[in-house]
Image (cartoon, rainbow, N blue to C red; front, top):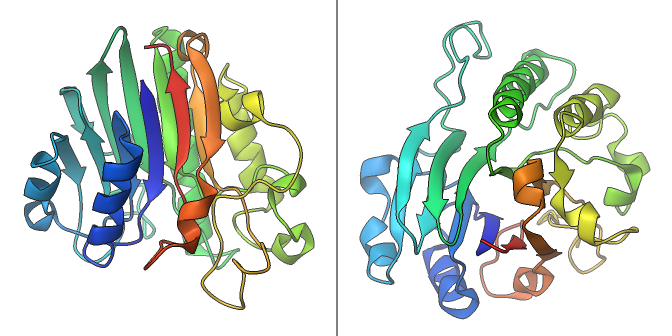
Length: 266
């Protein structure tokens, strides 16, 4: 089972890019972030015409996540648990950032797709919200481990885990994506018993999944790695490979992110 995570930076702006990618890459499951579309406006028919099942959790103009799958999507849930009082101003969290479903191939895999808050500027309310959101993700991740679920958590984490995951780490020292509290929160989740898919397959520096549109970041390879797969032990046992599909960033109307993939024996 080949699963890709891809922050598409707007389904309306990049629909041709995404559909052409699906035709060429043929993922079994695509986990999309920043669809920037309400559920009723998402062009699901264009995906269904290609044989995909579609589940979305969207909102107008911002955020939004989707699961696109050749296999049926079962037991779909939307929203990260614990949202009461977890918004930026202490109100209930209504931002569309999380979706789960089970996909059954040779084995059943629980797919948890997320778009984790950016958190800038930090310090401030947006950063406080990011850390609260990561606490809620920790609780959900712990539940998956306790239930011995074959599951993966994937998406745009907006976390640079280590200095080697940035071309210019010093430029990110004060950024919410790289602050010590952010990286510690990510490690707390991983240390529950998760395998970080890419680092299980590939070591060293120079591997990025995001390049800003500004200042020639792509041309200078000034990137960061912020799109991740975390696999429960039952899922990690199925891991064949994990890689970054870098070349799509050079295409027409690219997102500022590129797809990251896992191949599971499932």
